[in-house]
Image (cartoon, rainbow, N blue to C red):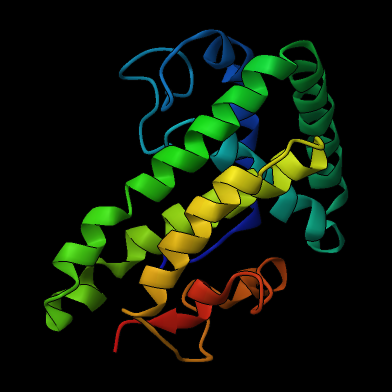
Length: 195
């Protein structure tokens, strides 16, 4: 189970990520740090385009839950995000494509380790995050009219294997506050778990 979700934390992380986005896009590494220095990120998650767009999509969906100050902050973050995305579009798209492949490939060890069914439930959490962020990357790429058919084939292969290790539970895997952002048919792995 994921830790408790809070809008202020999502907003803070999105703001920190978007402020570092341009520098990150110019660099080759896929997983960056917020603030530019090795020790500056603290408890912040790694900066990737997928982790940023995941937060932005959720926050926009949750706009009715935001107070006026939070709505204004989200507006500022969104304007900066759009400006950087427009100026560095090629780099932005390439990072998203690399991230999809990286996150899906990173799921492969789970299938070996999950053969031990007692171990599977203990190690499922990171796979849920990897698969969710890869789907957020797909959403972002498709919004940019990028052909994702080859990457979707990879995702279908991973999903097929994943389905053989989990069963539908109907219970949302993360904090229930996030359910509205992740409908069951599209994000089925968030409503499943190893038996």
